[in-house]
Image (cartoon, rainbow, N blue to C red; front, top):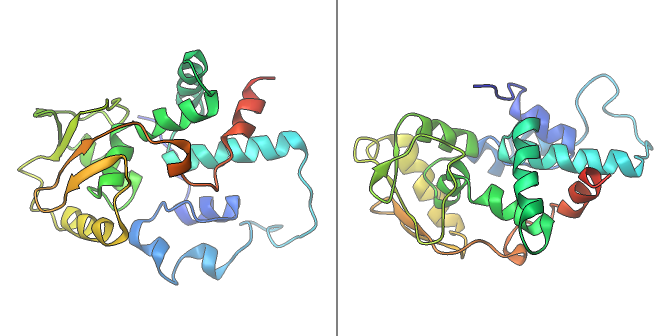
Length: 209
């Protein structure tokens, strides 16, 4: 399975903001963005460079891909589905990304990062509606119940991630029992409930050319 192997902190620095790819490290002063708030590489500290409209659109697309850990071909496929749906394409795109099983598990606190949640899913650690599902891109539907498998509930990393997520708060569109490590996907998130740092309209402009 193809995946992006670039260092996580380097990806955040390239986009100039925290993408929360390293779990708890992102919430400490060890975060690379906190320590070196400039792009990586030999020319990373140069300032005054202005991006064209295309450059801004491309950077936003790359940022969203990195946040959700998706490669270009898969991202294009998700966008194509969003474009065919009724409603606002950009909002539909984000809802589809947030409905992926690995992202839902991350939001519920079953993994410290999306990458860790994806690994837990791949290793048969997650059950959907009582059935084991090991496909990170599985589309979770409204009303689905997601639970950590009994064989994985004793893993310290899952316990730690669940405790940390509960302390920071669970999103409104999810209902989670952190003790039982079980939750329900209540509804698709509304745009106002998602990060304001994402500008999905730039991606729509890019793919509409």
